Amino acid sequence: MSGSFDRVRVLIIEDNQHMSKILRVILQGLGVRVIEEARDAETAITTLHEFNPDIVVVDYMLHGEMTGLDFARYVRNDSDSPNKYLPLLMVTGHTDKTRVIEAINAGVNEYLAKPVRPIDIYNRMVSLIERPRRFVRVPGYFGPDRRRRQDPIFQGPWKRAQDEARIKAQKETEACERVDESSDDAEDAA
Image 1 (cartoon, one colour):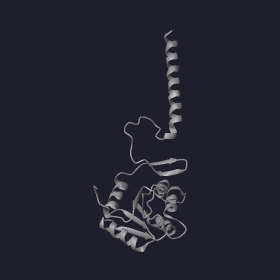
Image 2 (image 1 turned 60 degrees about the horizontal axis):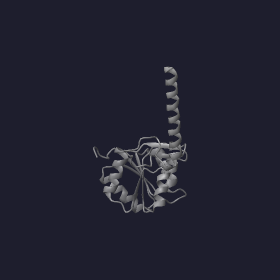
Image 3 (image 1 turned 90 degrees about the vertical axis):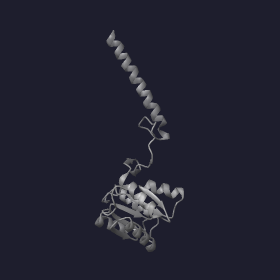
Image 4 (image 1 turned 135 degrees about the vertical axis):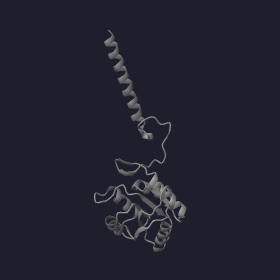
């Protein structure tokens, strides 16, 4: 990374005090100097408004009524959220595919499995800061673009399999427009 993390403000939301301490020590070892902690999402929301973090490290399962997913949805979608673009790093022991997809669909930027290694946290933080993904708003979702890579041979606006009908309709429309232009040119020549 070109700089250090000494000016990055981090909020840790972790209900396990020992894990929270591990995360704090790792972040401090990476140079983070300003760290706040919350044990549940409800407290974290209050802290979010008062502390204004640059990055949030959040666990999937938390004590209280809200989970880490609920917190992510709050940040991304609630009208009271102070920063809908806040980078969210989910650090959790829940690594099955359905939970990862749930987190991504809730708007989490990065997902990291416990046990964590300092290098993994470092790499995720560098990614969040130096290579942020653009945000998208589509029906039912607001958050970082869920696609990790760009297809270099892709030439059009559609990227999903269900877009085939749209692609076909667009090509037909373009073909009709070319026919109309050809007809206009022929009339002008006559």
